[in-house]
Length: 287
Ligand SMILES: C[S@@+](CC[C@H](N)C(=O)[O-])C[C@H]1O[C@@H](n2cnc3c(N)ncnc32)[C@H](O)[C@@H]1O
Image (cartoon, rainbow, N blue to C red; front, side):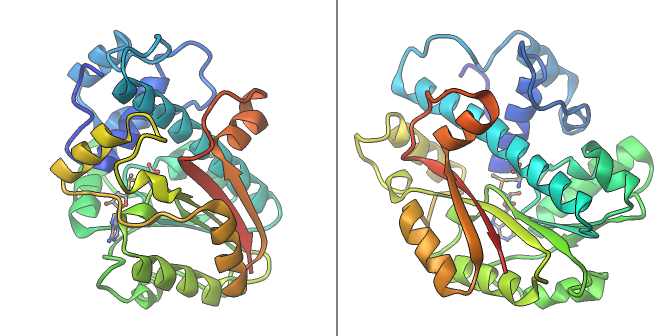
């Protein structure tokens, strides 16, 4: 990649979604993600500065291309789960570690069905996002609530003070976050979600294989990725194999647990299997 992916992972993932808008055969349309970047980034992405779709020249580039596709596929899959949940009566959307998520604006059913949307993230990110939205819209939309909270130190029950209603069918989305937290925090967040979920609620989150958390030769490019994440101060702290995750969630009382490795998502959405299946995976579970 010839441009800096950013100094934070939330800008990095948003940038992949923005880059996707300039690629042929867009599968995830997002006319809002550009709000969080200046024109020079758009210009550089237009020139395919991330080298998407070109033959990778080294393992680091190969890793970035897989990360790009995984980011797009998990987002698309999450959208589908949310849309299905809303169609069957879900009234709330809780985006945990939302970063620069644009689903409130992007998914038509969220607006059409007036789904109350709560976005949780660290105070600095919430503050930055608020500034971008106010700059763009002049205000924060009425049904969108931004909540500053740290999964490692704060009590998730503070959500209720912001109007989150645990009696409503809710789509819980926790995307791109679990691997940045210690196991204890991951466990606590999952327990909290399980405790709130009504039977018609759904949880979508993702995790990674332990192979993503230490330097090894089974995942090409993971060495450079670990160095980069350490440099920006957001190292991966947690990973668990898919089978173990399913058993852990069932032990916590979740039901209907489904694990989708990268190539399962690829098969589901793009009808082909080329991606490796030992890196990240998405999980769907119900109470
Ligand atoms: C890789 S980004 C993913 C953002 C978004 N969910 C997406 O998929 O594009 C990870 C997000 O988790 C947030 N995060 C990381 N650690 C957190 C913590 N301890 N408490 C709250 N949010 C956290 C980060 O600020 C960041 O926005």
